[in-house]
Image (tube, rainbow over all chains, first blue to last red; front, side):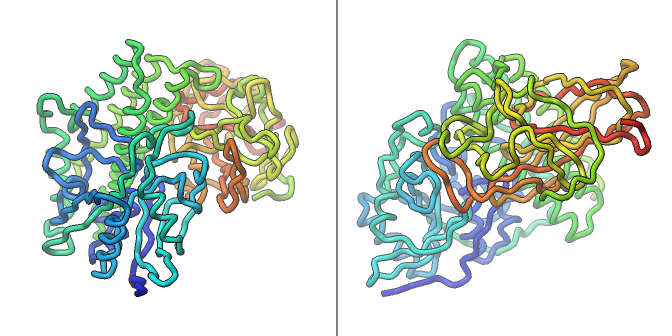
Length: 341
Length: 194
């Protein structure tokens, strides 16, 4: 049997990674606007210690699926599937493709020939499977993350990447190594209308409400959650603890979320000619750029140096202050735009 | 993009500030670490160290490697500028993801103004977001253990305005390690003597 799904389109945001890329491709194929699904929502949520070594890490509230967490303004659910073994893992993905659904599958870049990390760095990455050829024992794969790839892989190669132990072996196996891939794949569960039923301003209002809500105990959420999370990271760095993995990965999630949201605000503002939205979009994008700075400063705490300049707690606290100032300006801007509706 | 050397300007000597190595040769792939993954630009595809190059009509000194490397990872360094009246600071730079931050222009009369420094991502297949000019696009990227073909990291040309009608004395870079600067050229006010 041979299947190649039609209409499986690549999507990539330059400030986001494989999570957004793969989900965008899947929701696009299911009839949604990917930018609206991924960019309509903008929140901050993180439970201390929840961090996982996955390029596609996204913190979700308990009992809430990845898609419900990432895109709460749309009625989309998802389920991570954990097959018992590689054979079952392929059968499940194959069945999904036969049913007409492109599938996001986790792979270890170390085993994927088109990834620059091939035979070099272990990293838990996500790609799309959109077809297969039983006779030739090949799989059709799409990866929008540079270097862009759209083509075939031997089934055996994909199986090795999906069942890799993803061990951290050397110093560059960082952040996204150290946890088995486990043949996992992501199933999209779609119900309801393909567009958000509320006007775009409602998305902003709900996002703002979440940012201003008081966090639950033992939880970083909203504006207060960002402030506390970063304060705790500074304190832990000062106490001599290792913060690099948690801060780098969580900052990456925040960076991507802000940047994709900024593009949705910009696109929506242009499309509907909404006053103040283009400027608000730029402000949100600036916030994403501040997350870039904080994320890289975090990464440099691993070695304790940024070139000739040491990463000090004072520098991290300064980045926190700059980011919070931009965040407050951004939230005030959202309130202003919302009030003008 | 490079072009004929038609531009005016004062390339600044940044060597004493270089604290990161972002260019490597094929024979020394692990000798630099532009980003967290220790990727570097292929030096063989870029202008010679210390050469004067034109980018979009502006002259730059392509970095001659100093003791600490070939680029500045922004960490609040103070760069002294030959005293003069300038309109623009042109910058050869690249970032780890797009970033922007305030630098501070120090004038000879003691006044200080913030201006935005915006730097686009060096990462392959990633478009500029700030209206920059593509200065140099490579066809390969260096990893510590191999040369990766088919990925094309970029060094961008950005610019920062010098709005005050006053003599510029120095530039305080932002404390933003995502931004890397390879070269700066100060372009004088039109008609001003170099």
